[in-house]
Figure 1 (cartoon, rainbow, N blue to C red):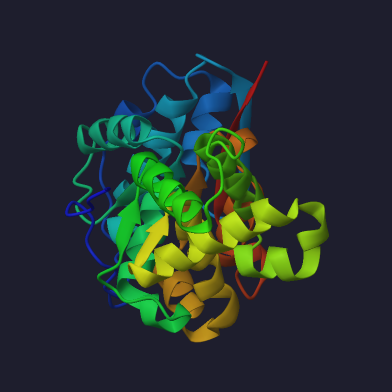
Figure 2 (cartoon, rainbow, N blue to C red):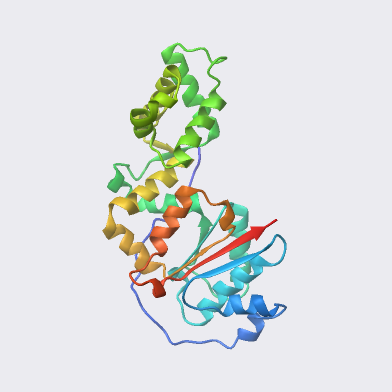
Length: 274
C-alpha cells in the first residue's frame, strides 16, 4: 500500500507581489547557448522547448524556475510537473542550489493530484483519509473478486485484468461509466470482474494510481471554485517531458494553466525529440 506522508495538503496562499530583484542573472545564464538563455529569461506567456535527450532541457527548466523566483515570483506560485519522483527530486535539488525555493511545488502528475484530493476529496465523494492501492494491492483485490465470483484465475489472469483497467482509466473513463456505455467491448465475465474490483476499492475507501488522475481532473472539471483557487495560486506552470503526457494529464494541466485572457497564460513545456 502506498503511503503519502511526505505530501502536504494544498493550502491557499494570499496573492501578493514584490519588486524584489536579485543580481544573479549572469550566474543563471552561465554555460548556456543563445537559445537556452532566451528560454531561461522568458517571463510571461507560453513557451515550448524542444530538443534532443541529453541536450540540457532539465538545466534550462530549473534555471528558468530560478529566474522567475529571482524576478520576484513567489515559489508557491510555480508548479512544475514531471513523470518520476527521481526526476522531480533532481529538479528540486538543482533549483535549491540556485535560489531559496521554499513552497515550490515540483512533483509528478500523480503526486500533484494526490495533494488536490487530500484537500478536496469530498467534492468527488472521496474521504480525505483514503488509501492508495499499489500494484500488489490491485493484484490481491482482483484475486479476491475472482474467488468471490468463482472465476478461474488461470483464465482471467489478475495482471491482465489490471492492465485492462488501467487502459480504460487512462483514456478518461470511470469503470462504471465505461461498463454502462461501452460494456459491449468487454467479455461479460471480464466486465463483472472489473466492476467487482472498483466496488472493492470503494468498500475500502481506496483508489489506485489511475484514479488519482481521474478524480483530480473531476475535481477541477466539476468545481470551478476549486479550479479557480489553483489557477490563482499557480501563475506559472511548467511541464517536463511533455511528449509522454496522456490525455488525462494534458487535460489536467490545460485546465490549471488556462487563464481568462490568452496572453496571461504562462505555460512552459519541454519535449524530447528522437
